[in-house]
Every structure is written in C-alpha cells, then in structure tokens.
Image (cartoon, rainbow, N blue to C red; front, side, top):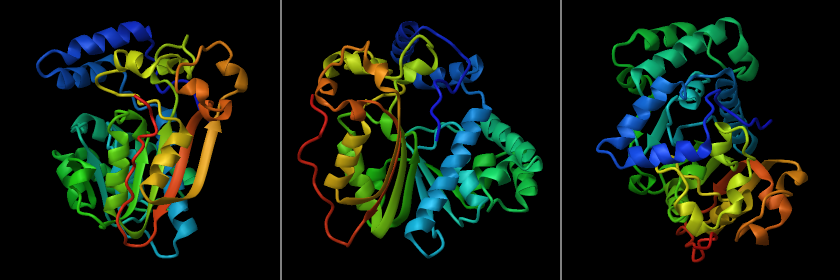
Length: 327
C-alpha cells in the first residue's frame, strides 16, 4: 500500500481550520452545520484515490479472512461508517450475505450514497472495480442502479443486507460478531476512550472471531495544509494537543505499536501486522514531545498499519490496566 499526503484538493492553513472547527463546535447543532459545510466546500468529493483505497481495503479484509479461515465469511461488522459506505457495499457485492456498519454519528446522506453508486457503476463498466475485486458480482450494475434511484437508499440497503446503525460497540451483545473490521477509524477515537473501545470490540467477537483494522497514523491536518509533515503533531505534549485537535475529528496520535499493545492486552492474538513508514529524515526537523521522544524512530515513522487478530477461546476479555498512552 502507498501513502499519499492528501485525500482532497481543498487546501487550508491548519490553524485556521482548527479555529473554525472549534468555533462551529460551540454553536447549537454545530456538528450538523459542520457536515453541511463539508458537503458544500468540496471536502467530501469522492476522489479516485479514496475510492481505490477503500476498495483495496475491502479486498484485503476478504483476503485476511480467507488466509486464516476456511469457511466463507458469515457476517461482517464495520466500526465507523463514515460519509461513504464503500467497504460495506463492496463486501456485499463480493458475496458477503450481511454487513453491519456501526457509527456513533449518522453520516450517511442520500446525495453521497447516490454519488457513490453512480461512480461504482462507471467503474464496473470499465472493469476498474473487478481489477481490484475479482469476486465483484456480475449483477452489480442493476443492483447499484436500483440503489442510485431509490428514494430511501439507506432503508433499501438495510433490506439488501447492508445494515447501517447508529450506536456504540459497548452496546453490542458479547460473543456475537464473527468478523469485525474498521477503515481509518481507530485513529479518531479520543485517546482516553480507545482502550475501553478495544476491550468492547474484543468482547463482541465470537470465540475464534477475527478483527481487521486499518489505521492512518499521519497528522490529518497535513491533508489540507501541504506545508505540514505527516508527523507534525508529534511535537505536542498530550496537554497541548488536547487544545489543538479537532472537536469533530479527534486524532489520538496512537502509534501502531501502541495499538497492537492495546489489542494484545485485551486478549487478541495478532496474526498479521503490516505497516507502512515514512523516511527517517522526516523526523529530523521535528522536536518530539513525550511520549514520542522515548519511542524508537521506527515506531514514530509508521504512517499506516493493518492489524489482523483473533480472539482465542471463550474466556473473559483481558483488562487493560495501563492505557499505554500517558496523560
């Protein structure tokens, strides 16, 4: 996989973006207003890079299951739906009978779903999707065309086996999920909440269940401010960062090795750990704050990780005594 410094062509000074988001967050209905502003500003354009990236995620989630399990994928739960349900649709159109996507906030909008369906139809006709996902169904175009034209696309998706729910993993019944995935979601969980979420994810897995998590470990402000290094946010202490990170899109700054430690402490056996890193010189101009100054350079340099793990046995979920990330 290849990291790129931007999902969007919308450029903005990161300080200005931060101040605007903080101001909007104080307004009544601020989160809804922020969503509408993103739609109007072009921040939610469906770029070729984004779509390719998420289709590749779907392929690798499927590959991970088939690498470690011989049975067909029975059901997939996704943590974090986001604005475009690319991965749930892709999994459904590759033969997974039921996909449940869970998010704390209701991001989906009919305009964005129809935009995604229209683009996937175009990519199917030119066989761009099939090049990434060989299991793509032959009847994908009529299925997507119905989705594109339906007056209530979210309800139609639910009837078709793609169930989008608003809620938290802590409310999901324990031991019920055979396969749990996420796509650039775990980095947005507040640092103080991530250990408990990992425990909740582990608790929901059925015995022998798998989890597969993609995490983006780069400073997300660097996506819209090209002057920033993807490691820019490692210069701030936890106390400083608390007053800097976005109120709408937290960046917990967990490095890949910390995330792996959280999963292992919760009772997950890591089966695959794939990481992509930046060049060593990228840290030369950054005065690292604690705890990053105490980490090995190789750990700080990770930009992207894909962790696959399993819950073994039916015993209680492990307790994370140390939150890994200091206050």
